[in-house]
Image 1 (cartoon, one colour):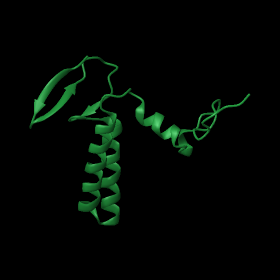
Image 2 (image 1 turned 180 degrees about the vertical axis):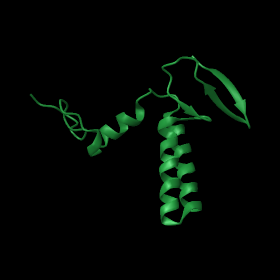
Image 3 (image 1 turned 120 degrees about the vertical axis):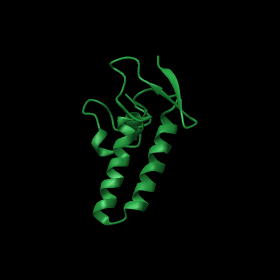
Image 4 (image 1 turned 90 degrees about the vertical axis):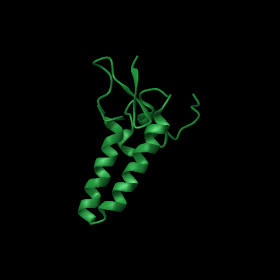
Length: 101
């Protein structure tokens, strides 16, 4: 359980336990990685302002999507939509909706 902390009219939580996911400001690590990738791509493509805005918007969108759901919702979504890097060896593909024996 985490304690709420108010900062600039935004509500975010401070992790109480050691197994809580790492946070940067009010975003978790898997959310901030998207922002870092967008900033890096912006530096390389010389479109830093545009891609930073895209990164911030996508990070906010993902954090709103994750709010109130289980911890692995992003990985579940990636498996469900058949992203190749998230395929599991012992499980059927994510696009298989019915199994017939």
